Length: 331
Image (cartoon, rainbow, N blue to C red; front, side, top):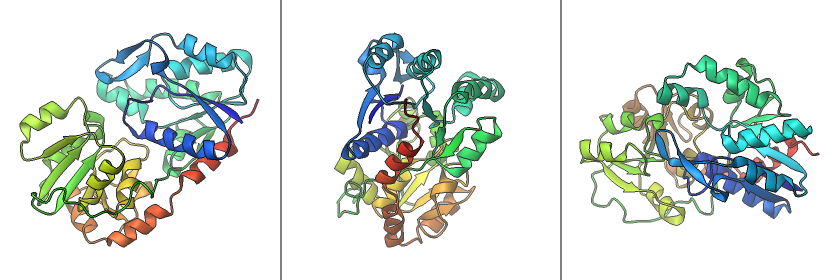
């Protein structure tokens, strides 16, 4: 099958959306399916308002029009940006069936960055996803949230982790830091609620892996916190493995692939009991959930690393690809 994937989130962006699709495409390729990715870097771009790291396509009609002029079997729209919008428009005008996915709590982000009332954004979301044969959500809780807001085509997808890349390892990283080491990995941005991690009265040390618009401010204000920038592949896995607890402070993520990556390296999770973590973290099995991050981290420290490994190994990217294929709408 030849699949067109329309996404406004792609390399060089570093986030869960990009990572999810890169891994899913890798699995689809091993299953003899071809995926053409329609993304902003195929043409001229402009920085997203208030978020310079994200580049938006200036002429999505050229990117989408070129791809849709060639034969394809299915269309999947991953994001609600210019490329996703243009792909949806062409599918609707030509009567081409398509599927979508919901990766980001878009209404919450629009409220936080632009003070736009969620009711307005949800109206847009219902319109955007309403024509899809299926809208794939990462967890059952997110699926129920979408249906409650009128997106009745929502279906539960899943997420996975590469346990050959993310695995326990002996490393000298953080040997100079007081234990326990609490680690965060991801964008250093307001929507990730990273201030809650930075300001939490956790014992030992804090390490931030990643970058983003809030890094300079936080690094100046909190010199005791170690900021190491983005890490990838084996180097990222070693940073996970060297930590004692992975702290996931976000209240707006739909999933959080980084949590499974940390688990695959034998590290337990401390997080809030909210959408995303509540579907990933099992108390006492691979981490702990609490409205008090300090309390969650203390309980997570008691979780055996072997239990975290076992949980991660039950999550497969092959399953992610199979569920996607089962929902795609063929022409």
